Figure (cartoon, helix red, strand yellow):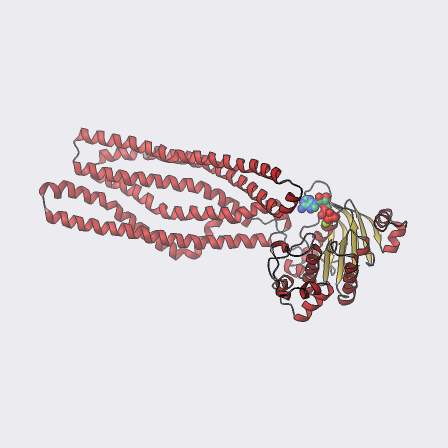
Length: 565
Ligand SMILES: Nc1ncnc2c1ncn2[C@@H]1O[C@H](COP(=O)(O)OP(=O)(O)OP(=O)(O)O)[C@@H](O)[C@H]1O
Ligand SMILES: [Mg+2]
């Protein structure tokens, strides 16, 4: 909670203002029963109208102060808590945006989503409630007991005696609730995960007629959340009755003792009023605890993300060969530390050359790209760009070198222009060059709105090949030093694919290109082709050389081109 509370600091003024108003309101509230006691015990028996009127006016002033103080304080707190939560959400969002892929893998995307949405909401609720009641309830509790002592210490002792019991009940319930709410939040993550998968995979689910199956599967996830929610509600529903019971018992004690001691009716009425205040105060405090258990669980989840420092630091590493645009030197890597996903990977590419990577599914092609862009750090060996280890680059400087189209990359629900520019300062000449090279001109020209044509979410109003062409245009528009196309021309027809490669060679000759593909035709003309097999290099060289020396490559060529080589 400590880190979360730091977000309060900028709004200290509002906070203090709110707390002062709350203080004034609560103290004013405390005097009311005492004034009532005087009125009943002194004003009424003596029929002293002046005293009654004076006391009545004072009571009115105190009531107004109590009312206005509480209303304005609550408004200030709501305003302030809203601002603080906004800042917290922003910080969390930034942290997630800059988080390494390793971090995202660790937390999982759905859990990050629910931390950003529901957890920040619970923190907001908790902080606001604590501020609303955190001043009022203790003042009413301590002041109420003090005033009752002033009225009659013997009766007050009965009320005071129940405080430890109420506290004990609140602490036990809160402890149980903290655990229950942590479980609810975990199950909530599972619901978000199921939801995300269903929304993004809606077409597959429908195409495979798996709607009923998914619906049944969701029922189970949903039930787990509902069960945990119910458990938490059952525990929290114990709170009010238990505390009420303890206090009602105390009240019976007060009345019995009052009758025995022949206490005045004014004092007994005041006692009843203080009793109501005390009940409210204790319920308020226990509600703070109940809320805190949920808020603390949420804030712990948020802080885990904010404090996550698994992100990649900048290291001091020896330099490589500056002649090479890209070099992998004996690289090994594992995503989960159990068995290498890549091992013994060594190759180098000169500036302006094209590297083709080919291999079966799961052979490690995209992993090479991930390591090159330092989405993950190597476990062994080193990756160099322009002769410098990628671990020595500031992440911004490193990523700026690249223009990428990832496997299953996505376009935003925005215009074609914005999707290609993507908030970068791209000149018209660079824009047009990229569009032309990516064979995307016709996508624009055949639409009435041209570059202002709006894409639907996930670009569902474009064909697969059209999407790929726009994605390639986006990657090229920034005139990158290194272009990475990870399986990003697979939806293009052969003729367009060939034109694209020709355009790339002509228009972006100084750019180093990495083309990951399943098709031999896409990598055939590359300066260097790597054939990957199960995380290892099975062969490396030009097409001609590989055809001669590499059995795996020969088999791929044979299968795709239908020729004996
Ligand atoms: N984030 C990840 N966490 C754990 N394992 C992963 C992760 N990403 C990939 N892998 C595993 O690493 C191996 C290599 O995956 P990679 O994505 O590099 O394959 P690929 O050659 O690009 O395959 P494809 O042609 O299907 O795209 C696979 O066994 C895959 O299951
Ligand atoms: Mg891949």
